[in-house]
Length: 258
Image (cartoon, rainbow, N blue to C red; front, side, top):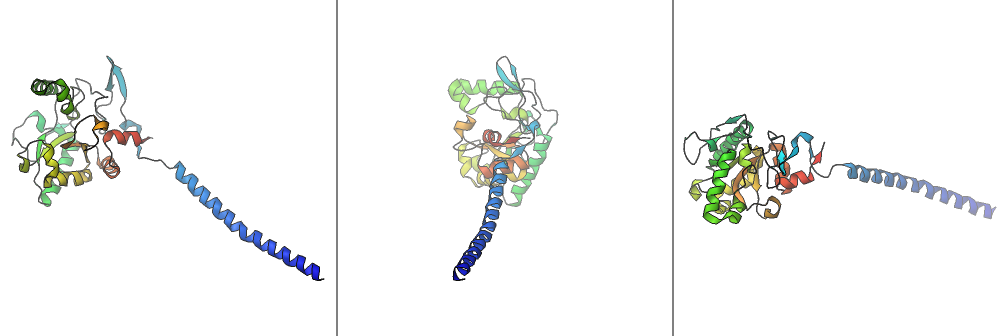
């Protein structure tokens, strides 16, 4: 009887252990499912396929076939068509460094122009006085700018700061150079240290703009740091780029095409 009692107790103990182990297995299963779900989640932002460059080869150059794309990646690898001119160029109602002259560089595409007006209004509310300097540039105008810069500093040095014709973001009508009276309306790297430059760097993304050529990203963008050059990409993309500290090139490297 004593032996039978011991065996019964042992059986009960083993049964209890088995029951205690079962929830642990369930917990492990739940944790495993969580990990699997986490692995299935996209590692970067999801972006509709229409926002990626649709490239065609023309005379050995990668030419963007959808230049009207608001997030078109224009750089030293991807060209805009030489005859591309945005159809929706308008003159934003903001202060310009050159006053009220109605000239080519005072224009932007309408979505960017509307957003720029809101950005300038937001800055004014905080006592920040900004001035637009240079927006849209045609292909032909870029030819002139590069030629002038090359004459002054040589071609190699000129290409560090001036995009070749067809590879300038200004031709998209989505970029604006911005300055302030504190730097005599010049486009200079010291703008980074001004109150206006700092406000822009910290707040432009709220309005859909990004600092296109950030500091320490020269190896990625292939251009020197330009604290004055802001590019419209829309609020969603601008927020993701700002929060991750990316250049536009890195945004596309991390974005998942859907």
